Structures are given as structure tokens and as C-alpha cells.
Amino acid sequence: MKNKVLFIIIGVVLVLALLITGTVLFLNSKFSEPASSDTGSQSSVSDTDSSQQSSDTSDTSGTDSSVGSASQNSSDTSDVSVQAVTTKLTNLIVGNVTAAKGDKVSVPVYVRANKGFMGIMADFKYDTSLLKYTGFKKGDLLSDGDMQQVSNGMLRFLAVENGNVTNDGILLYIEFEVLSETQQVTPINIIVEDNYVGNQAEELVDVYTVDGSVTVK
Image (cartoon, rainbow, N blue to C red; front, side):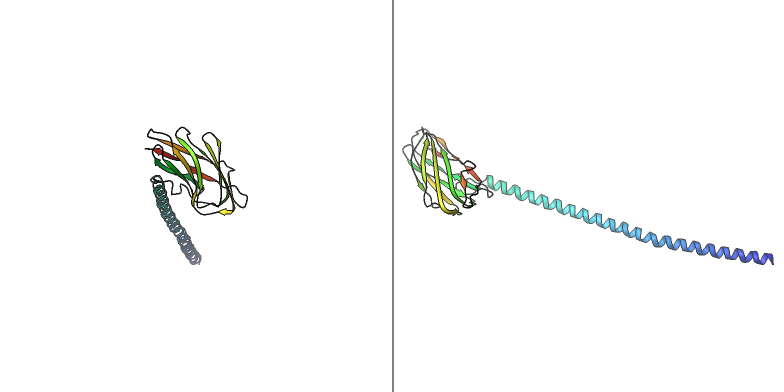
């Protein structure tokens, strides 16, 4: 009788051991699947980030290339008298002309990338031993204006309109007589202070200036 009970107990223990082992294996397999799934997900995310970084790098290089091209095109501009130097600011550009001794020339002053102005004051500096100032003419942008000789070799132009001037065009022509016989380039410098240009809203307008010249041939 004792032996029979012992065999029954041993059988029950074996059955319980098998059930516990099977349960543990089952649980391990269930919990190991999400871990592998997460790993795969992380791998795919990593791959996605890598591809995005690669794409971003490509986009950046493309942008740099286009900026470089724009800079080259800007530096290749030979006639600054008719093209804006920068689109961020109103450009005031003195033209370049060629003449011989005794010639009378009209040097244009251009406005490009115009952000709008109502009043403007600009100074022009030149060499009185090479050029003689003879007068000025207003350009197609203005209804009126005035030029004064404030000192030897320094002119000051002043204009105030009834409203904002928003177009590009010629601001004025400065007229000179060429005195020099020597072949050379004499600069005409434009000077515009920070408070020299304003619009109808009484705001100051930032400008970018480009000097011009008269080349004596």
C-alpha cells in the first residue's frame, strides 16, 4: 500500500514538473517575440534616420551649390549700372562712362531693388582737377529735385516726393566736363548716411551704394 501511494506521489510530481516546465517555456517564447519585434522596429527606425540624414546631406549640398552659382553670377556681372547688387536693400548705383578731354558727360545714378522711398539726400564726391561740375538733370523717377555744391569736390542732391517712389530707374544725371588729358579712371563716390533716405511712413530706408567713374580715354 505504501509503495502504491509513493508511486502516485512521484507521478503527480512528474506531471507538475512537466506542466511548470511547459509553462515557463511558453512564457519565455511569448516575451521574447516582442523583444525581437522591438529590435526590428529600432533597426528600421535607425535605417529611416540614416536615409533622412543622407537626404538632408544631399539637400544641403544642393543648396550650397545653388548659392555658389548665384554668387558666381553676381560676381560675373560686368555692368553694375543696370543690375541690382543686392535685393535686400535699395541700391543706389553710380554709372560708369568713358570720355575724352573737353567732352561733356552725363553720369547716371540708378535705383535698383527699390524698397520704396519718399525723401532722399545723397552726396557725390569727385576730383575737381579732373572733372568740372556743370549741372544735373532729374531722372524718370522724380518729379523734382535739387543739387548743391556744398564744398570743393562735393555735391549734395536732395529730393522729396508727394508719396513713395517704388519703381526702379534713373534717379538723376550728374553732368561734368572732362578736364584731364591723361588716360585714367576718376571715381565718383556716392555717400548716403543712415538717415538720408526715408519713406512715407517716416521710416528710414537702408540703402546699398555702388560708386561709379569717368574713364578718360
